[in-house]
Image (cartoon, rainbow, N blue to C red; front, side, top):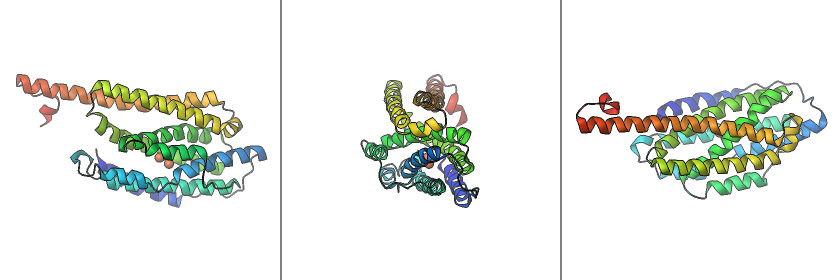
Amino acid sequence: MNTQHWIHHFKANTRLNHELQLPEAPCSLPEADRKAIANSVAIFQLGESGGGTRLRRYTRSIASLENLRGYRRAVDLFVAEEQSHAALLARTVTHLRGDLLQKQWTNSIFRWMRDLVNLEFNIQVLLTAELIAEAYFGLLTLRCKDPVVQTVAKKLLRDEMGHLSFQRDFLFERLKTLTPATQRLWRWQFQFIHRITAAVVAWDHRACLHTLHITPADFRARAARCWESFQTRLERRLRENQHQDAGVTRGCSDGAPTGKAALL
Ligand SMILES: [Fe+2]
Ligand SMILES: [Fe+2]
């Protein structure tokens, strides 16, 4: 995994979030829309505001792996970027004259789930939230009429696309060590958990989605497309890696260097 690339990326990108200028005009959305969007954004704000303690603790367990050298530093910077998202969303909630939350039931479930198994599962739950965020911030960018919400949602959407790429790089390193059958099992449980999460979020945020003229079913379909796109790219990389490995094995057995062997 090219952790140096991610270290540079997070350092440069997080600074932009701290410096992001927001339009100064007060919110002029209709009262019902303003309230619904403020409540919904406050839930995402709480989700972004974790300190990453458990994630950092897990990363210690793989710190010595050669292909993940630098991963701990990259995760520290990734957590700092998520905290910059929490700060931007807090400014958005204030702009919408909403209340910041200390606790909320879907957020509590996410936090509980993340600690259930191991690092890979923690990343998977985080990734599920980021795939949902991709659909959510994409909709706010396109459909919310408030310029502050639009500006923040657009920046967060771009950042979350980067996070998806970061998580994909990590999962590729871990999943390539599994057999194709175990990779398929992983895919099924990931898709299952993602579908349930998307359904819960669509229901929990239905008032906000209504102001954007989106039904819960539309939201679930959008979230499913985000999942499909992520998974397709991950599987393509895994397949390419398998073909390369097969080339190395053939190259070793018949003496003709192919695939990775040809590069050595
Ligand atoms: Fe985020
Ligand atoms: Fe993220």
